[in-house]
Length: 240
Image (cartoon, rainbow, N blue to C red; front, top):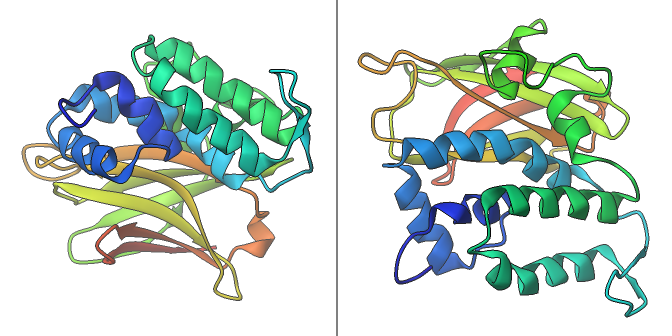
């Protein structure tokens, strides 16, 4: 991707398996490409499921090479990325969902995106899954930096916590992450995204940003969430 930015690399970016030069180039591309930004929001649940799954032991390698641990599964995904890069985005998402099942031993990516009990109906709403998840619950209000507002809706899952974020009052270009923080100060990235120059929930671009993802901790094991830029600035803090 170093010679040109490919739209299909949004999947690899969401999973965090782009090499650093490609990651930097694609982050810059996101700031000017609403289509890729929207797709990144749709894929954030898959990325969050992968990030929030703790190692559960060795899994069987589908190439016949014996058992592989989670680290080797990630390595296998990296080797396959180059071959899959020019495939349709839908094929990549199916592969990512298969990777979730492989690592977790049966946890489906669709669970993280649509909810275990059908709370967020996929394909039956004018909104995206992140906004549907946010609208379906009772938000926890956040404390933001100057002009930034937002909140979180949390949902307990068998695998941990599903979090849906609404964010307003931000302008880009920025790269941001939603981070869960334990009472002991341990930190886990729930999901990440890019903010284009026009921003969200600001004059000229009034629509809020909605993203969602997952973390392996239960809500009782989380002290608060932070929305932080990759530059280290805290934009929003939501206490649990």
